[in-house]
Length: 247
Image 1 (cartoon, rainbow, N blue to C red):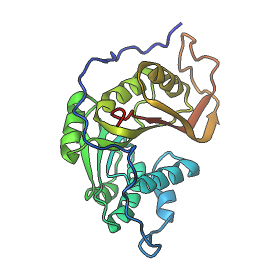
Image 2: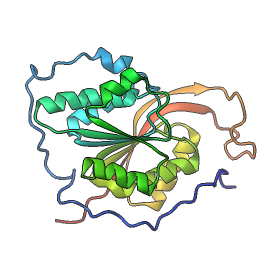
Image 3: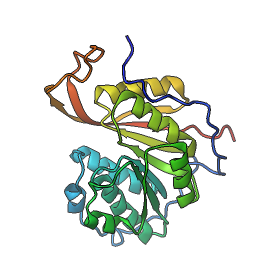
């Protein structure tokens, strides 16, 4: 038996955008910063309005900062909390001379407060559309380069997770990272497994394993494919785009 909800066709034929020179496989060039420059309020990480646990918040902030991410894409913004965490890392990187830009794509930003939007508007652009190649071309135009890091946290149904990942993949820099949130949820988990079969993405595994387990309040799959699965929310799974080839 295969998962239901096959209403979104998977398009594996669209052409990739031209790859730029250089990739995230090359030696790092993020300027070293003194502790005096890294002056921030860590409480802001924990106060950000998002459905991420402590481990996930800390990992997201630390990774964006440690990699020196310059071009960030987020699919599914909800209340904007994860973007606020990334913005905090961006602010520190900019003190070291790194220019950072982000794009947020969601079919609606109605849950993002005016206060959060104001905080994000200096470094982030908002695209209020469903995920599509057209939306991705618009996002790519706004930052003028492929993305170093993508957080995929939109619709968690099986086909949606696959569709979102395959749609953004052509716009990811060689060696760039795709992070799927709520990867412990059975549909996202199985979508990741299928993506690893369909693509040449590198499997980096679960990098945040802290989850919440909930008793099912209603059947999620009446036909029974995931009938025995407990509902787990949380967990982060990391995939890496391939390099352009041998040098």
